[in-house]
Figure 1: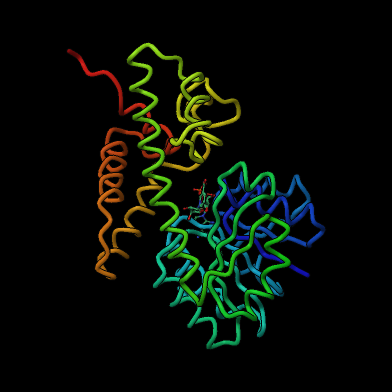
Figure 2: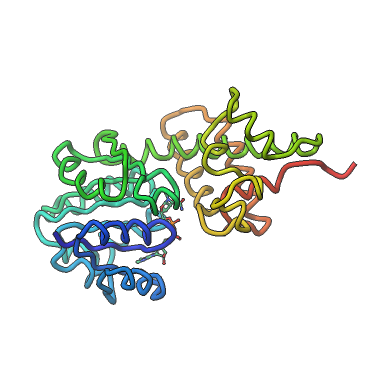
Length: 296
Ligand code: NAD
């Protein structure tokens, strides 16, 4: 099976590497040549454009920043819809708005090309370890076709519903994640300000009712955990501006469905302020720095 992989950033790079490791023939493209080079060193074939990567491919996987990039890749000028073969499968794992996912599904279907939205959860560590959670939107037949490919990059593969459902489930999850990250940061800083050791407090909360994923896998306080962005100057990981994007998607979705999301709205404001203070490209756990003792 020939696979094209477009978008080799923090997430796409390690995901593509796992496809190579699983024995697929993988042709890769990214706008940044150094990202392409890193993958060729792992056994992938380089392409000079998305069209070249996708020509003759049975499956295309994309991992791009936002909806406009995905729409443009498939349906824009010289989009892949004009180049993919009948019956090819497109797996878009970017986190984007559900409307864009549905529009791309419809545009590709007109040429007999299958599509699933398959956003992921699990972060860069999950992408590297091949343990991502995939949240898939598409028909049952499309889900079944995508599953063997997704299983080489992830551990839990969920079928959320029809096209767009994967994206809706994903933004519900990320809205909750942002609230957990803000709340965990606030609690840790309160403890620090009152003389507690952050590692001791984290251990206590891990065994208490405040336990959550950010404490288990992604502690925001520098020095508590190894191999997480907080212990690496908040580099790598999941950018503040990508979390802002996801919270924007959650708020847009809530507006359309007349849902009330006050905690998500507050997290969105906090991440917007954090970004405006120059932290947009840092990992989202850097929100920790916003809390703590004020000047008396
Ligand atoms: P990133 O910015 O590290 O990577 C995006 C890559 O896409 C970059 O290498 C960029 O050069 C490339 N790119 C952009 N436009 C392109 C185009 N037209 N053609 C080819 N390449 C193009 O971002 P990331 O952290 O890897 O995130 C990618 C997606 O995954 C986003 O939608 C994000 O919300 C989602 N996501 C990220 C994480 C995480 O922890 N980083 C977790 C879950 C989901």
